[in-house]
Length: 154
Image 1 (tube, rainbow, N blue to C red):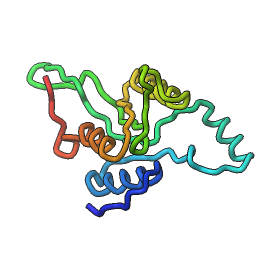
Image 2 (tube, rainbow, N blue to C red):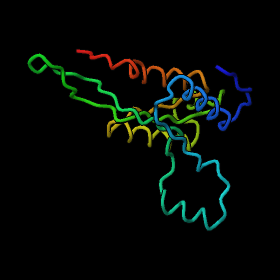
Image 3 (cartoon, rainbow, N blue to C red):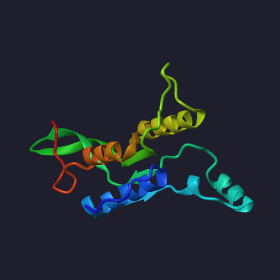
Image 4 (cartoon, rainbow, N blue to C red):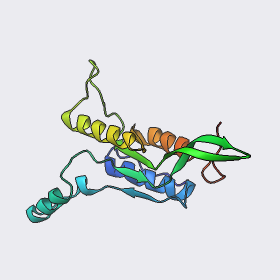
């Protein structure tokens, strides 16, 4: 894998992850939400806010559903529960998510945590990842077995 220079920014993290996904999982569909990093004109900002009124939408979505529970019906296994895709809220290396008292480090991170929880409640895997290595681990664990057929845990 081609190494990307390490500059500690979320944009560089996005680039590292995009390169990793393209090399390791070329058939997986993914999308980054870049809106938070864009500099919009006042008119564009108003339109964007009307379309996206809630804050905290995760940075990365991987559109790969996954069966996670199976039930034996006769001689067949059928999925009984699905995860519909993977959302990751990406943070650059060194970002602290929580304070020493266990509360979220900022109001914005709390909003993001709430968005991730709402996504979990409707059937998505949704996680924070701090840095490339943690993001890679979450992606690999989620996509493990997708290319070679999913393992059917009973």
